[in-house]
Amino acid sequence: VPSVPIQYGELPNVPVGATFANRRALHAAGVHRPLQAGIDFAPGQAAASVVLSGVYPDDDHGDAVDYTGQGGLEPGTSRAIADQKLVLGNAALIRNRNWGVPVRVIRKVGGVFRYDGLYSVDEFRRERYASDGFLRCRYGLSALTRSAPWVARDQATEPLRVEQTVLRIVRDTAVTREVKRLYEFTCQMCRIVLPTPVAPYAEAAHIKPLGGRHHGRDALDNVLCLCPNDHVLFDWGAITVLPESLTITGEAVLEGRQLLTVPAHHIDLMNFDYHREAIFVPIVDRVDR
Ligand SMILES: [Zn+2]
Image (cartoon, rainbow, N blue to C red; front, side, top):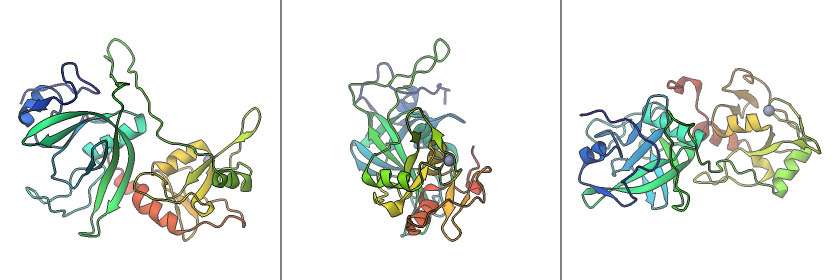
């Protein structure tokens, strides 16, 4: 197999809808290099492409795809025998989300492979399937508009320019205003109050996320008042709150610290249970950092 360098974004001479007879043809065109694996990535980098081939149960809704990561299967079968790990392509797709790098999506359609354009990686969660009890890595992908193509520039000649999508929407609602009022803009984790010229700044963090497949509620018992740094750490699974003790875990500076609470703020502790399983990545699982 000749070595083809990894390429991100749209490729010259590969329009959306281009078809390829087989995986070897995808490889030769640089559209998707691995001949079997569903995720094309380079070590320590984001993924460049994914193939939806039906081996894993991807929920494919066209412009929105709930993509399942790799691994955990009995060799040669589609039967799960282990939890999927946050390594290799599974870790790479999280970098796509964190860095705003889209992936090419290729679908197997009628025996050929079709390039279907660029998708952003909007969401990552871990999901334990009731059918077999094993954890899957799940990614919410959504098609980028064709009017604003994303192009990776040649890194040797100019800096990589990334067209960012807004990944974390900070919504201003009655609930989010209320939680900031209750804590007077104090971060419930690190206790910082960020002063800005006319008013302090804080963010309302939903414990069980609103979007995607999480179905969290925009209610006071599902929000925290956090600084932007701790909001990112929480949303992206670096830290969580243990419901039994309301202590923070997962990150050295905050480890063991007590979540700041006020009596007027009732938190539904079930939301922390959800966060711990679906969003938080335990330190022992972070083997590919
Ligand atoms: Zn903080």
